[in-house]
Length: 381
Image 1 (cartoon, one colour):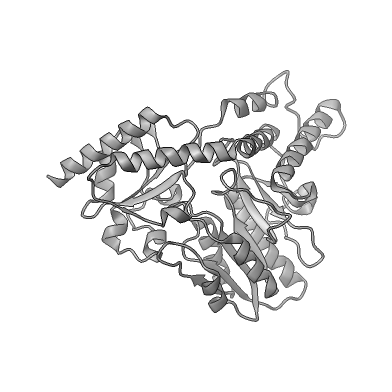
Image 2 (spheres, rainbow, N blue to C red):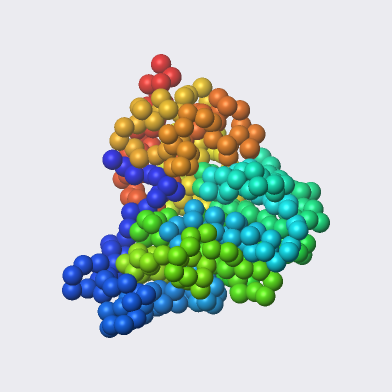
């Protein structure tokens, strides 16, 4: 199997695994970090706080602004629901919220839920490149807009949204700004001393860390906070209860630090893989969804006119690729992201996402392109 689905999840880096093993089994620092009555508990707590410091350094934020979660889905839910509940509890009557049609389901489904609670929801259309522009946000914002949520990098196309401009515009209108940074962390620099976001969501498994752990950045402010969505114990300064998985947290911090240290070289490397892959497709007919000049280098989404995407996947049994978001991969429906970009059902259903990463090799890229060319040739017969 040649794995080209790094946008769905990444294998844990061996250096990350090695760090995690020191906090798992008998004879290691496996204790509950909330157990403050013995040495092992103190050591576990110290490891958690050291990891928080590492991540805060990478993001240029205060350690007190990071809340551990189980991943970006929980972080998105905690950010959006928690912030709106906090505002409502303070007597804020604003009931309008904005996101884009190209968001991950972990945001879109939250907005649908909130619509059922009486919030007025606006879903912004992207431009033909898949980008959410400030101009379209400006056309949607209202005096009673309480919150705007926009992803930094789209998980299906790799398109990068102008997150700085979106955040600045939102803040100039007095609304809260949340960014889903699950796909951008480790690929793009995130400097929270400059980016005026109130909240950002992160996870470890997209950056060669373990599944099941993430974080929510919540800017320290007298104007807002987040209400906990998981009750019981009052952990994480009352914002998220639950026993902390020390091994996963340590792995998360190690993964982000490795990505931060080698970011430029790694992105140049995966950009080369993408370029060679497209070059090796030769005379195959395809369309790139999303302007490649506006995407992160490791993701490319291709439509193959006249080809059924599911049949193409079946013809590629040795390639680990996907028809879109991992959360929607079992669905036969066309991608909501590609539909929002203006593709018709047939064209959207003919699309596959290829994503390259740290452990991709040149031989794999060439072999994958060859397999794809052969499959397309057979399906055309």
